[in-house]
Image (cartoon, rainbow, N blue to C red; front, side):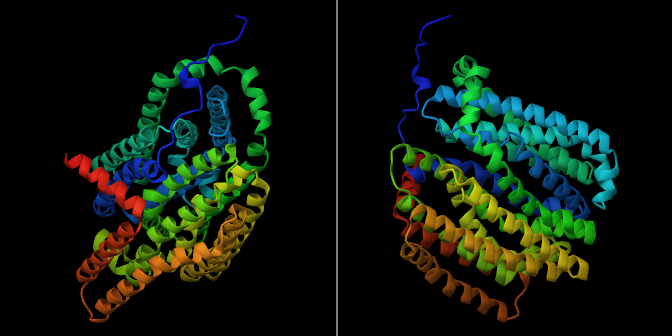
Length: 501
């Protein structure tokens, strides 16, 4: 059919922009539900499943994360960038085709390797679950593409609901498997994949109902090809940077499995998961909204300094005291909440907490690199992070000292993520006066509360009393943080009052 195609309202990228905090709040509500559910279930799961089971799951998740992050060749990052929704729809269709092709290649590779991969990982049990890898990679890739499409369309409520459904499904299945006596790592892995499958299916169905007609109209090779060439920096440069970055994140689980017992991997995985809670609840949501706002700002020819400064301030405020709290009372918190068998995970978390603070700040802000087309610079920084992490873990592993390995790992992270944060602020044109003021405000609140917690510990109290003191100081800290953030405070008040009515 020749002639111009009339575009519906859904094909235009002109749509009202909500407040930054409002969009973040929509995402955070689903992430918060997911994480709260995970926290509530964790004390039960850590008593049903041994550290070895969590170690196997950590290995599987590590490999899936490395492969899944590049399963769309990073073209999902380009979905929010075109001015026309029709072009974005063509990119979404291309992402679906790409993830199917990559997953198929991984299936062939898994078949050819057989049980050799389990031997390389020093984890014989991995041979029983490796056949699930292609499916896990497909689910990871398709979920990424769907999330970026919804971010472009400002359907943040969809993403939030998908996070909640994912968590509810996976947690229910884990608990059910544990109570039924299926307490191996394969049960944990299957539950995680089932939750992601339900979540991806829900997102796909909603996208198809709302924007399916437009996607079908533009899912053509002749439309996608010019866009794939326009955004070729994503597969040519960004994919390597993010692959190295993701591999460096998953490197500890893989190397620790090679040098130490599988239970050590389980302790590390739990310690890191608890440290990442603020990121899972807020940081990743901030990153998605920040990326969408950067795209709009660049289209409008606006600067990024104020936007970046605001996000930096909120990230600093949210993460500072939780990291201090873990550094002070990690073993007591883990032993009380997860059981005495997991107290060692609290020691690991103590060692890692300073690095997590800087990572929490820089990770969402690093979305500025693809938005500005600076993937080459990101590749250099991520390569340096990977090399320093590898050397740190290798030295500790060869010495047979897990504490040395983690201390060197955390120290390298403090240095490298500090450099990364400085570089991001420079790219955004954000003054360091703004950054210093942003850090000074929560620091002035956190230090007195940390001293109170430290004083309680010096009294020789039980772990339960320490946990109560930690909870009280944490609640006090966030009350002050929310009250001093005017936009966030007004948003929360409006939401609470609206629900009360």
